[in-house]
Amino acid sequence: MAKTRVVTLDLKFQNKTQAIASYLIRHSSGAVLVESGPGSCHAGLLAGLAAQGLSPRDITHVLLTHIHLDHAGAAGWWSEQGAEIIVHPVGAPHMLNPEKLLASAARIYGDKMDSLWGEFLPVNGSRLRVVQDAEEIVIGELRFVALNTPGHAEHHYAYLFENLCFTGDVGGVRIPGYPYLRAPMPPPELHLEKWHESLARLRKQKLAYIAPTHFGIYDDPEWHLNEVEKGLDSAARWLEQVMPGDPPIDELRESFTEWMVEEGVESGLSEDVMRSYELANPPGMSADGLYRYWKKVKMASQ
Ligand SMILES: [Zn+2]
Image (tube, rainbow, N blue to C red; front, side, top):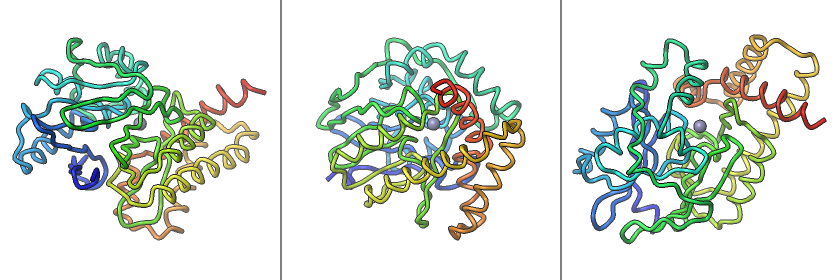
């Protein structure tokens, strides 16, 4: 039973519950984390482990869905504690030498970089393990399968664990208690067509549970994946409407943010939950991602 083995650790990102998760699975000689979370959530993660009776030395492996800071920021620290860090081949060089990754994040987050994300240490090369698409990852009695799932980012894996799938960000953002999802669409690699293909691949897996990093484990994977698809489609329609006017990026950010607020109000989200969505997935960032996708992918293909 996959679901009963997985413990959801709430990293309490920016003192907010249900924004960023790290998933814990015990095995015969330690435990695995899916996602390290960012460096800024270090205390939250260690407290979560302590509540489970575990210390950092018990973590043998950390599986990263992708290298965005909210998912992989603390991986370097975990490698120094002795954990093996498992990552997509395209993400691996950035975990060894994070300068470019951090410079591009600094362009998005500016002077909030440190307070949002904390320290990002390079991963110790001897602890980094690159896995290939469809590769089975065997850890004690546990079996995971890496599924290449680009769209949100080029270097994205979802991990199958029996009938449960850890979907990182390709499975969207969903806060417990509301029948509502959002697809996080950051620059620079957002690609809506690839994202659709990745969702189609996930649908083929006969899942009973889906576990996005933002946030929790759900037992309605089909509905969930349909909603992500709808979100991508409505973003594509929105782009088709606004982009022919060639709006400046500031204007685009503003109108996208307004659109997200309207959608949230229509869906009956409380202010608190809206804040969780914004933390996990800043609307301005998705506007930037869509803008770049439009210029780089859509226009280039015409
Ligand atoms: Zn991401």
